[in-house]
Length: 413
Image (spheres, one colour):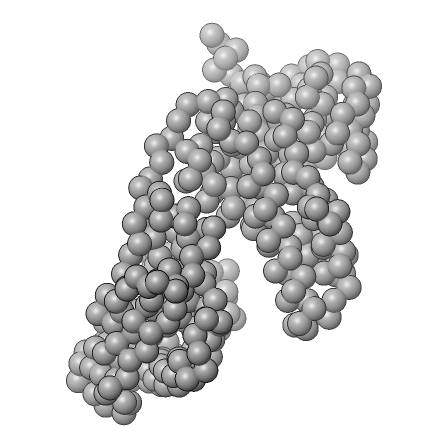
């Protein structure tokens, strides 16, 4: 697996930082010129206006020579490779849509809605304004230092253009150095330098299976009783998102609150103990804000951040990550299996049938842990959770214990 660590450029002197800024300006200018040239159909076989999306992984040398720059030929190749990857990423979704459209046309099936989506959604040309430079071993050397832990020497980018960047190791970089190997590749921008590490994959170990419920106040609740806690300043996810909702979008305060939210999620999940866990089952959330408008706190609840961090922790800690449908699981009683909408009220769950009371997130996590009968779509549409029904592993039953949907395979056995 690949991991990274960010390092500030504050230890570089004024002239080095000026050299880095000049290099980044020229690199981004050339990168944007190459992207504009490719997007206009100048490259054979690629023309977004006609949906010809076969983009090369490397630009030909004669194509790069047309564009003036003080960069060396190798540096132009590096910019050309990154331009190709950015363009391919921007048209990847459209390429999949065209593939599916051709497949449906061959089967003579209805393509009306897919064709309409392709016609309405425009392709967006990538911008190189804030692009980070990705440099491989052809352009960098690592040297150990006495005052600083590491010097990154950037060379062969232009005629007589070379600069050394002093780096001090952090807690994160030392952790990945102990576990893996430093790769001869970096990412560079005006503020920081990113080191890349190749870390051996951790084998998946055996252990108990736990359910994990995401919350808009507490980051995560596990079915074994573990719950993420507020930080030392008393902030939880709910207070951070409330602060974020009061900030003006795109302002510096909004960006700081976004960073605070991401750091809090990462810190809170790092505090949990996964050593005894073999599998984590997370509720699968999709389209939470679909066709909904408003300015509530839930608009700033970014559940993908929690999923991404859990996937990363699974690679490091060695547990399996599985997504489970969350339909009706937060309304199901983990003791008597009754599903009723009125049982869930905010952070409190009180079963309308047996009266069992529990934290709502812990109850939902307990339901995510077990294997339940898959609810058909027509049952979901019928809204039977308003009157209540029993949801077991072998079927769905009414309050009178009459089967609504039964597992026929188990019934035959």
